[in-house]
Image 1: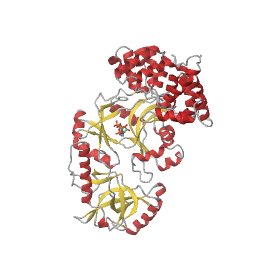
Image 2 (image 1 turned 135 degrees about the horizontal axis):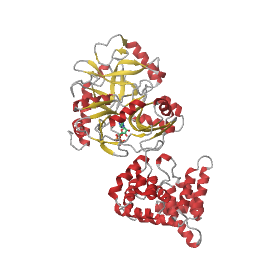
Image 3 (image 1 turned 90 degrees about the horizontal axis):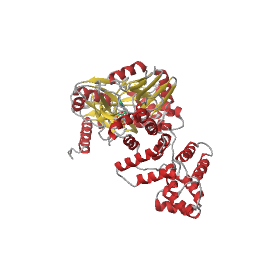
Image 4 (image 1 turned 45 degrees about the horizontal axis):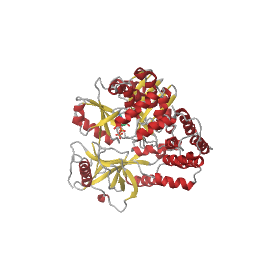
Length: 595
Ligand code: ATP
């Protein structure tokens, strides 16, 4: 296909916003192309060259593309900048400047083909390392030199990552179904092929090559990411259980990063939730999967969670972001180790498990995941009773999770790749807004540090002051936010105040390594106040069998030596904070709320 013909289609697509018309345009386009071209034009239309998991991206800096435009059109830098200021689109700038030039010098040359344009763009995208910029500019200049103004417009948009035709992967699935003769009949099967290959270009090629039969023949393959199954949400335990027919497997919903891990012999590849290859960020995970996944071939899913190396407790999602860096990965591994919690098995040793019910898949997981300190299956519990589910959810939040995902366990509980559906229902507590205020809490106990914190106390049991009973009630354990000098200083302070038994005014069921006289006041921030069955602060005030806790507490660096322990944040204040959070939720959810 000539590239200018493809550009005509692009102009047609840009000329409408009606989905049906767009589908019709794509169907006509599909009729005109060969299977290989179908793959390429699909990716080009989406502004890419490959599916995301291949990791080769277009996206040249506009500044560089401008250099090519200058060389081809002879326009000056200021002319280009002026045109850019007026048109706001470098594609249009290239089109305009080129049409001025080409009208003067009529060229008789072979028209560009889709294959040629694709091949050059690919070469440009693959240039890396020293001299890459110069090579990119040279290649683009060569391509633009052969392009008509309209073609130049789309080439420049493609290369700078600004295609934006208003079509997405789903538009091509719809168009392919219509192309095959029945949008409703074939759509589901085409979508399935897409969901298990994450490769829309491949699916379009198959549609052209062998019709629906070729689409049906697609199989899950190790090394090719499967689009993830996703959850619906509900906000009450009773509704969730009703929706699931009275019973479900409640699993902790970890606050980390989803990983789809592919294993083929000794090779491990990790894909993100968006099917990007993120293997290089996690050499430690690769290593652990090599040793702890007992299968020759596997596709399994887990949530990776940042773990505090000293306390072993889970850290908020943001901490994982440190692993995004390109350099010093080794240091990041040490400072931000991850725990892996496996929750699904998609494919193991030649068998596609997606059609098997959840509990069978979980059994396979149990067989192949060898648990150790930082690796295992998600904490899970079969629930039939809403109260039980609520308790489990509170425990999950207490343990640093976002809430739970309750999963269908009936025979129809298959793994539905790429679908958000009612087979998984999430139940979160994080509708609650973040805590705005800091709290001043009293150290009532300390835990020995591990790893590089050994020899010091690394985590502290903190309490709020209860005026009514003149006691200090436990409200959280904090091990985050301390610098080395803090730990040194606090270790000394704790040693001076350590006592062999729980001090009389301390009310705590949690037992620290060392009890501490309630004297040291520290300023703490947290994400929210949550219900907790293990802390004694306001126990039974909001709910029977439950106290209140600070979620994700961190030391701010401030020692409140200006405060006596009795001046610390009180239990009543924490109850108030919890209640005002609920009002925030009510207002946010539009149910009105007390001012
Ligand atoms: P969220 O912001 O809640 O993570 P999401 O759109 O990414 O939303 P959902 O379908 O709502 O995804 O929730 C499922 C996500 O929760 C998964 O993608 C995974 O990252 C995470 N997760 C944590 N624990 C589990 C678990 N036990 N089972 C399945 N997914 C889990």
